[in-house]
Image 1 (cartoon, rainbow, N blue to C red):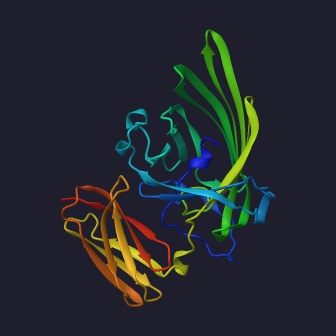
Image 2: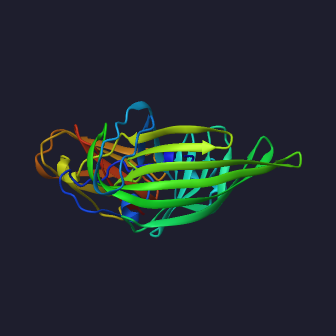
Image 3: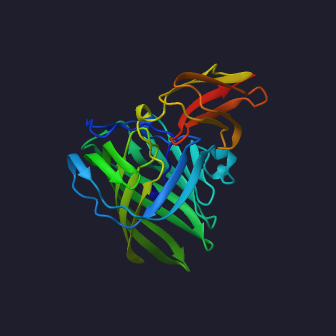
Length: 336
């Protein structure tokens, strides 16, 4: 639970429409979190995860009991960057979660909780390996340390991850096809010495997560955590900004040029309907550095130009949103 319930998602993502079913394969491009991703998480009660297998239909009955949001930023922009030198992206700011991503795996790099306790992984935990298809499975060993009440704790564990089903999932945010369900089981312990006496707490987290390529977090999860100090503790979440297929969005295509940009960046986009359009540009820390709008652009191809001549060299993320629809995101580079 301490890892998987804190994952993040892309502000705009792709979803295969309900009714067109094909066995999915989770990929690094489809799952790895990015700087600029926005996570909107609805906390829920525990729900029955349902059956494993191919072509399943899951409707677990999630009900929101609260929500939170966070944004993916450059780890170097966070106050705990020195503890996570290999991290690719961090999510905060109430609790900071650090991830390392690659074409091979999506890994937990560390967590800083709301009390400021730094849990740094010396052996990273593989949250997913890529590509990941139905019936794929692996077990990964990992380790971390943290200091609490002047005692140094050593956390060691094993995580077994299995793609045990695929099909259609319904949440309060919609019904989604080509979803992969992943059975995620963590068995780990925290150990230290208190007055020369060994002290150990054991944990068993049994979690089911539903992933969808294009959304950079599980779109839903439900878990049961048992510990030697108490339990079971149960709960779950579903994401509040999972979007439909871009073909179902008013914005059906978006390209940015030139990239690298020097003085300006052009947004070339296509609309299926005439709607007000807004554009936001984020820097690598997730800060909005530009905003622009077009009132009722015509249906079909349109272009919007934004000045970037005064922006520092670096990587930026741009979102375009048609009124009543969800954003589409692209990455670009500024260099002078």
